[in-house]
Image 1 (cartoon, rainbow, N blue to C red):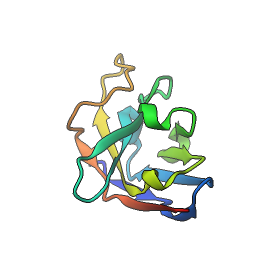
Image 2: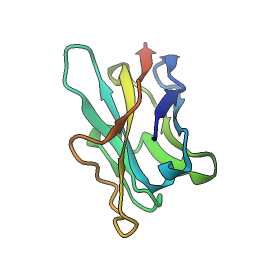
Image 3: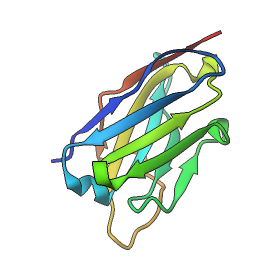
Length: 127
């Protein structure tokens, strides 16, 4: 049973960086495409970035292109979201999500309802 745990959130001044981590308890995490979503209270959850199980494909929301980078390290069962040039509008709870993929399915795209979710980590960006 894959359980996702996010970490790395915090309070940061605009223009600075944070790196979020999404760790899993089992090696089967390597077979999952993984993504990051974010949600502001009272608003809908929105897609931020995703990566294929192999790490060979990535996707980004337009509002983070050029600023955020998603990557994965299969050796330590972790997916990272490097967030640079943070803006106050990036303030949200960030959630890691994952969906199991067939070995021949190298898409980064996640379904609208991924199978697994983490508990979320708060990111707050101030001026």
